[in-house]
Length: 315
Image 1 (cartoon, rainbow, N blue to C red):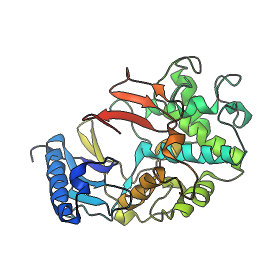
Image 2 (cartoon, helix red, strand yellow; image 1 turned 90 degrees about the vertical axis):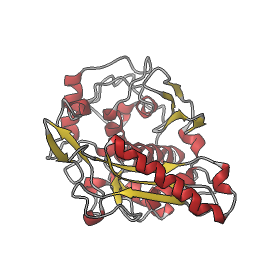
Image 3 (cartoon, rainbow, N blue to C red; image 1 turned 180 degrees about the vertical axis):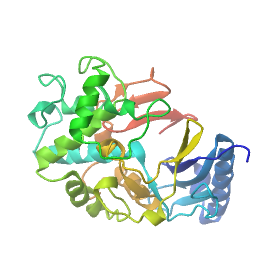
Image 4 (cartoon, rainbow, N blue to C red; image 1 turned 45 degrees about the vertical axis):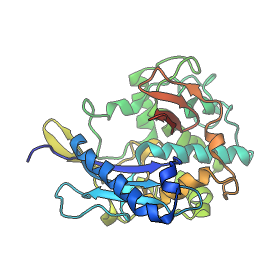
């Protein structure tokens, strides 16, 4: 069979390349260029991909390539839903920023004011978890392949706290930086405590509905059209494992959301629109960023959002 193409890619680009701004006549040429770029991903074992180039005030330029599953019977199309993984963290951050604007919490509050059982109760703040500077042990390291295995059963918050203690604290809060998923699982609990609502109820009412993001769902907390999912895979112990529909309670508010390219375009453009219904902007997420240039090609990390430099562009 040759190279096994196993990954599904959802791409959103927020750049201002002149060749896309010229005129509608260039749209087809731009789509062709994007399609050629997506074809090149085959050598990186990408099964199917979709990318959208979004400019405020203009229709997005979109291209697709490949297939939605490993059987390669259905071609990728613009209507597919994807597990958006750690892009979930932006929505967790948005909920906390909104709660701060409502006066229900401060990002500089202690986590222990809202959630019990988390390490360093006298020191750890919400802001430190949002920026991955909390230093608590990360439970999700036990689920990351190739060493770990994704569970197909419910993982409770208490399970996470226990595994975080097993993993062990990494550093004192605020003294260093390391990407930490458990921190965002904890933040989901902070949202529930401060709002008095479930995570899904608060997120839907205060973020998804105002933005009219009708194709975005909180994974295991909500029902969504599974037949529209683009599927994803990884290989473990020589076995191809479908990771699309299993229980993602282990990812929780760190990574358990499902969305479409159209909805993620809505989200991306919201960040650039000062008049958006949330009253949030890109600057809110980029506030007081931490220099993380020593950590694998990143540049800076703000609140649930990272910055990279790609081909000279800030992304």
